[in-house]
Amino acid sequence: MDDALQITTLISIWLSLLMSLTTFVGAIYFWLRHSKVLVKITPLKRYPKVTLVVPAHNEELVISKTTQAILNLNYPADRLEVFIYADNCSDGTAKVAQKIISQYPERRANIQVIERTGTGGKAGVLNDALKIAHGEYLGVYDADAMPEENALYFLVKKILENPEKYKAAFGRNKTRNARQNFLTKCINQEIVVTQRIQHCGIWQLFKIGRIPGTNFIINTDYVRSIGGWRNGALTEDTDISFKIMGSGSLIALAYNSEAFQQEPERLKDYYFQRLRWAKGNYEVVINNFHHLFDKSNWRVKLETIYYSCTFFWFNLAIVLSDIIFIANLSALIIHIWDPTVELPFTISRSNILLAQILLFNWLLMILLYILQINVAMNTQYGQSTNEQLWLSLASYFTYSQLFIVVSVHAVNSVMMDRIFHRDSTKWVKTKRFAD
Image: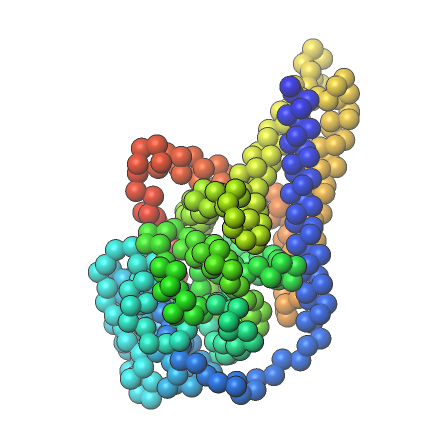
């Protein structure tokens, strides 16, 4: 039984490495194709009206720069409609936004600050905006996400390539406080890998896109037709991504569209933010697991397999692998003083064989982790430095291991929510910092 468990655990981790390697190869091919493409800002064949929505709950520290960035977008003012929602705020979010708007009289007619007291969280805000939006497309920017001047231009340009098939388009998000401390540097590396490797790789290989929480647009009539966002969803972006793929439409990657968002600067804030994300993703996996056995299209099935493997199977395999490794290492150390102590986990009669396999397994994970980070950094101007190499090594043994703790906590929390019928929509707000 022990042999079967250990072998299954190791094979599971190798399968996860193979999945990561496949995405990695797809990303490399994507960047080889696009790295020499000269990007030009030329007039679009048409400028559809866009309704931009900014959900903001107690965001007075960051809302001013985001509002400024939106008002400075390279997009015709008469083709923009902007709703800034001060959602159940107890601070000066609305006043700060109004102050910035007053400095742009030429755009004042097309922007509103709405003080909301409804329920449903961010998804509730988006559904409220959906009811009054006049734009052909609805775009979303979080209160801490500053779009680059041409961010919306690139989103619209991409979706106009095939508006019948592309019902949504999403861009990249970058860390605007990346140099603040060790934590934000690690978060920056994670985000760059997610944006430059994972998103680009699966788009190149499978034409699968995943709506992020910010910097995306979606066809307004289409999102109404699928019922909008699910109120209270902890990860409303992943949830609606499955809806879009389930209808046979695509979420297009506009890789030149960029927004700069603020990341947590304290470990506690980071932990509870990622716990919320992990819980939301687990809920999405559970709610969509039935698609593996129905007649859903292959992209939905592939995403369901990916999320199920990543958040359940592979995470469990890594936890078991760590337990095996630590238990054997501890026993080996104790064996120095007490020769009667034997390794608790072995394969057949060869302790050396298991040690070699575990060591090889760890080396593979470390190598791929560092390789992904540094290739991703090389695709982004100014990010590839000697510091990033050493930081990626340090983050593997610290930052990345924290995700295991978050995942275990999230699984337990989701189970308890369902057993005791707890309200799973409540979450700890991520603390903002003035920058």
